Image (cartoon, rainbow, N blue to C red):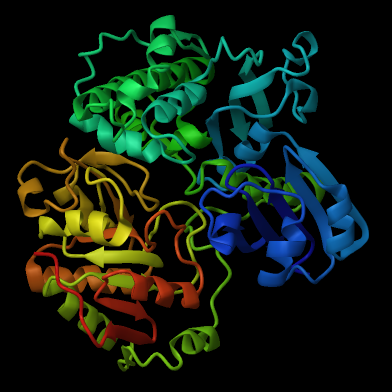
Length: 551
């Protein structure tokens, strides 16, 4: 049977997530935050009972294999799931789950693999062979791991940096960026704010040294450790902080991070001679650094999964179970990130039922819907787009998106302030047909998952002020000929009308919210925010009392 075995992967730590595979078919993958509506929600005992089983299809059928990452709840598994006779339950270590989330679904037959995050599993819990394990205390934790991987030759760990858990001697590139972020923007998941702020600063003003890189190991110099403790001085928006100080620290930290990451990539290349690089872990969300990996390392191609952070480990767990426990060929490839459970038309209709404050149209077919959307976009209106399965990773890629005209300078400030309720300096992203991207952006190749911040061509930047960051870059998404047809049609139609095949694309959510998941959440967010329209195929929804347009 094509749907055998049924494999469930579960991540119970930060950015908690779950993934169901039926044979080589990926049924769905979703982050817990999309269900609970709490950003970066950690996993806890009871998640299966309270959140996943009531909301997600397929969990009522017999499960053949359950693979968990880092932590496990054996009692809950037995009490909540229908485990098949002889079902296997295993737990794998953290970086191994990252590895299976990035290499096996990649387009490569062989690659070097780099996993970098804040911290992973303790040495005593490793479920992979590492030559240093026998001489390393069991409570020390992995902070980075390096591999060679091949579809026929298997996986070999060629090195790990581990941390002795001494808070006075924090190490590793992931931990460095975490400390940098905490100095500027306390809380969880604010690393993207540091990336956005960095181009406003001068990396030389604070006269900070480079990070200490020895082979595969990264150390944090004392000068950095001391300065990062001065949080009142640098905390963005604090009463004692100046914007220039915050921006200068972000700039210095971003440069130090990028330079150290490049050094690690060069070391890995020297060890492996591999043509291709796979990169996962929270550090792989740094789009500016990722672009330098493309430009400034000997690797011919670089692959990053659309969910490189801990969320992606649920998928890695499922792939591991399928391949290593069931012996099923690893056919899944990460060609798109539309992995959420498919919404039902009945739920879309129910979300709009009785909405007397809204005007609901049902254009005749995709072309008619696209034409109406283009009418709105070309007149300066901002649209929510809800269609199909949701994106698994943190980037909205046209299924849970907000779209606007990138030629209008004020639209970025309007979205940041009025819709998102967030910092004014945050950049917004462009989406462009893959074959047209080189004419507008300095990028060779595709970027379907919005993972590289690359230069906007100088002659183009004045035409696209809403998506061009202060340093002249943009974190673009490319849409290939076989990718989402509605996005392709919108981009083609926008070029016919304006001469520009680029739209502004940002995630569909309000202030401090996760991306919308259900039709009900999409309609609620549309009502709460001053968006002008909501395209939710087959419907187009507007407001009886239209909000003001960006001036």
